[in-house]
Image (cartoon, rainbow, N blue to C red; front, side):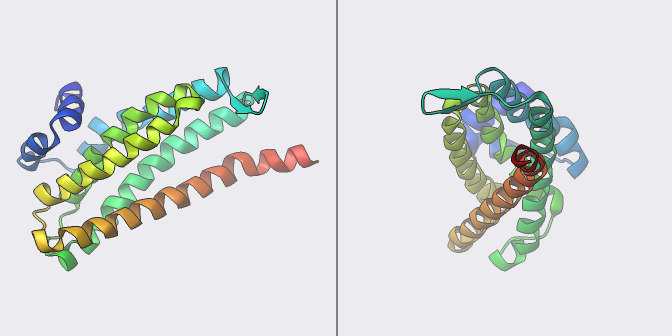
Length: 197
């Protein structure tokens, strides 16, 4: 797998690239080692730089995160983003038979991992926190990529596609929210307590 070509093609010509991906064989380990763990580092690294250099803006002032807090944020964000991708793939695989598809963890994980490309690449904008909203738009595009991927790779019948996709969105949002709460608790909980003391 050529990483650069895969990223470019899945973003620029998703329907064509999903057809190519459908014919490729990957283990779950391959998907993470050769793709996910590389791209998932982008939001974490760029966010780390952004919070260290530009920081948060509040009214007329701004502040940067202390190094120890910032590095914890980056590490937990990186690890939990990968955990989140695995959990989403695992759940949509469990649900596949209910929507006319078949259980195949590698294929389900393939859809989630490659669909997340847009979100990970959008993480580049985290380097300037004020532009991080662009990452949200990239996340929305990832949902579109997931829709196309489910339809092509998982061969979901058209009459069940909407239901499967809506369920996938709910699962994705739930996982995103839960991982966000965990990160905030692990990284900022102790910091807030220390500040209060």
